[in-house]
Image (cartoon, rainbow, N blue to C red; front, side):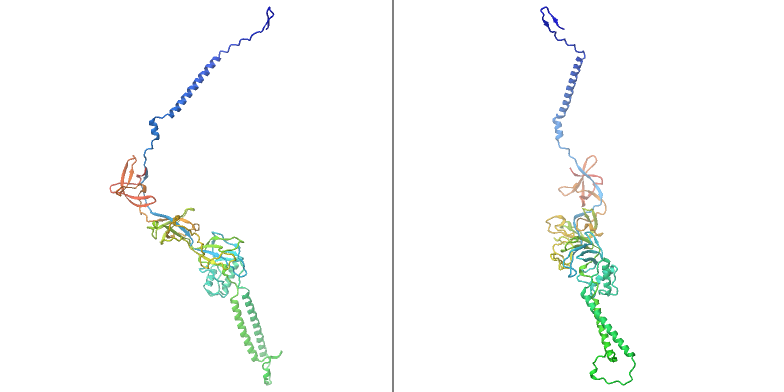
Length: 527
């Protein structure tokens, strides 16, 4: 609203006074003040508690930093049978390993390649089984103590022929009427049946002997025809009518003339000719028999692998189908596995034949028990079986690795299971004592070639004895031994004892006269 003064001056109105605040605003300020005071008091209290946990008295600090009170380590006294033992290492290996080096069976084979494989490592080989085929030549296994060293064919004689006859007879192929050790028609028939059973062509002695048979047979056929003709003529002359005229003297110049066609030969001439023809026939028949006796089915030495014991185990196959053959193609082991322990002189002390042993292959957990058969003299040669090479490099393809002679061991080719180094894996040991082990059961094939743990179990205590840990034994300056017994209340007492057999960290003890030590008591083993 505008007012006008007498002097015509205009006066602007001032601002209106504010409205008085409500009565509640003062109470709100008081509440906020009280809340702030409460928060401050809470913070002070919490800080005081935290500070109290950080502030330690000297006694408290000493108690916390002082070493823990002494405590005793105890072990119970037990009653058990103790078996002293010696732990060492042993090597499992085959007594004999056969390395097979294929050869060519004929001059027609100019190079050797693997054309078929019938086995793989780990396979078991039985009698008559096909092992491989090399350049079309089969290689099969037969039982026999003597390796094949020549081709066996009609007319052959000797113990190797008898070996073949026995092997084939074991497969159901008898040699008929042939004498033992003589390769005749019966043996030839058995060989033919064996090869047919393998699904292989039957090898023969070849074209030369067959040609001799053919030539001899033609001569025999011709001789028989001559004999038949002369015999027919003689019969015809005997049937002709007798001439009543007296015989005319024969002129000397006609005695040797041949009979003209249609004329009758004198009986004397026919008899002579017939005898001569029959003699020639007998001679040619003998020649045919001789030719036939050396002709027919044969067994090339390159085809057969004689092993002293079957079944055998394949330990290595050094080739694949299509690869050239160079050196050893197959390795086989025959017979039970052998194990030899390796003891240091200190370990061998007290080990005698007849002691029980335990063999453990740690990687497989296989355990076999046995006995000590023999403790040998110190040696540095690693335990290993013999290696016998069957075949040879003489007929191997050019570039093939030379091998040892038949029956010899090639250099630098250890048998499966052979290990180098000192006994128990300790390098630098000059020698060890070999311990021959006789297993209670045949060693499984999975242990072949492994270095196993050998535990020789010496004489047992027989009956349970009081036993404490070796660490519980104390010896005073006078050499008297004792243990410290602790009762449930913690009281300690010294018990004099006499020690006995020790095994596996335990020792048998006998309390001295008047002292007592029972199973279940606690003895001090450390602090």
